[in-house]
Length: 121
Image 1 (tube, rainbow, N blue to C red):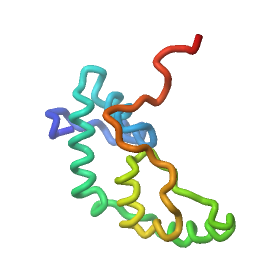
Image 2 (image 1 turned 90 degrees about the horizontal axis):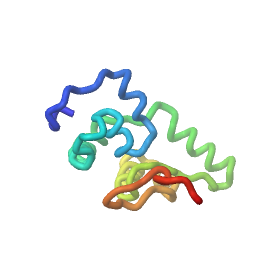
Image 3 (image 1 turned 180 degrees about the vertical axis):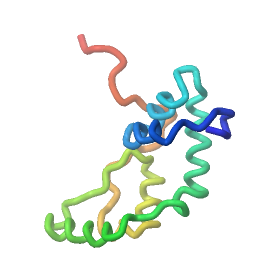
Image 4 (image 1 turned 135 degrees about the vertical axis):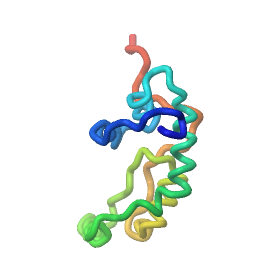
């Protein structure tokens, strides 16, 4: 937010953006008139450079994932809203790739929609 000349939101507001697509989250935090695409670009540049270094896997997760894979005969996959390339980089970095393949992630696009803009007729 600082890179966009904006005051960072309170930590409590950040909890609401865990999960939804990045453009939805940025619009919610920055308002409808914000340069969401510039925010996404800056966020992804930061995430590519520092995100993996600053993140950690919770203790016991890799073991739990291995147990799930065995229990479901390997029919367990990673599904994420992260872009396919970054999801793969993340899975490789944290050692998930041998346990769970990244099989459901969006292919990068210029923009995305999470729901129709009008009701079906």
